[in-house]
Length: 292
Image (cartoon, rainbow, N blue to C red; front, side, top):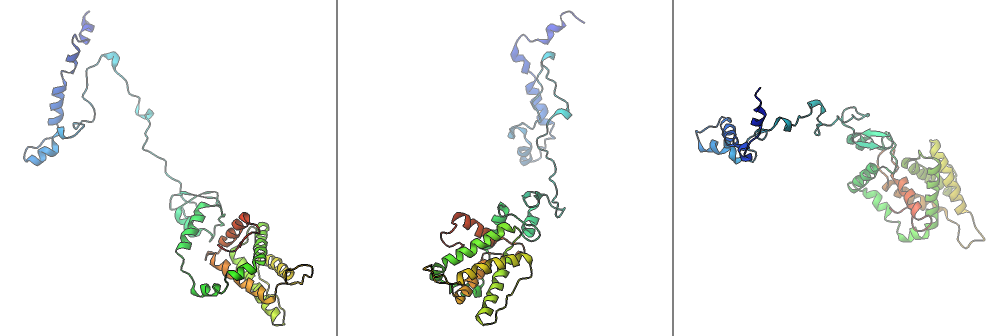
């Protein structure tokens, strides 16, 4: 080992450190198997047309041994483009679970969320996927002409005249739902229909109660029945007149129509109940609670 060998590592003029760049340029150009048959291939393969000069890295520049930077091993390098696989939907076990279901307290796929909500999943009214789905379905629902014609006979005069009764019935339904969280729209509609049939038998002179089959419906039936009995009782100390039986039948028919219009065809729908609950919170006894 020569005593002056270390002096050869440094250059007297720093510009001479890039003396190999021009030759590296020709090496990178002619190593691409350049074809000179047609001018088209020359333009396509000529490295000067590309910003990176066809190179994966810059040409090596002579450095001092002390300036060499050692790269970390491959197992220590962080790969940013990789991601862990998404979990499968626990309901279908086929599609990735993207939506959080508050009823199942886990993530499910969008297809199961759309097809099984309010069918075999008791969705809470606060779920934003449920609220968005209700708006989407209501905008594309085909109206029933018979139902619309039946509702048209109940004008604003009717709702204004029976506002206290309508508000009381709606609040009674909300109270029943608070005590029975599993109450459904179909339960409310069936109870209103059974009450209508019961009142019609009373007007014919042969009183017969058409009790519903479900226990949840029976509880709501008796609550509303006691409410209407109180409105039909004469009140001598009050200036308001007692409610006639024909008016009770009209109110029940109107409420049945309103509940049917504001509900959907899903077996576990609570769309009408959620509507009543939201409106009852905003206006307890002011305005018409049953209007959408």
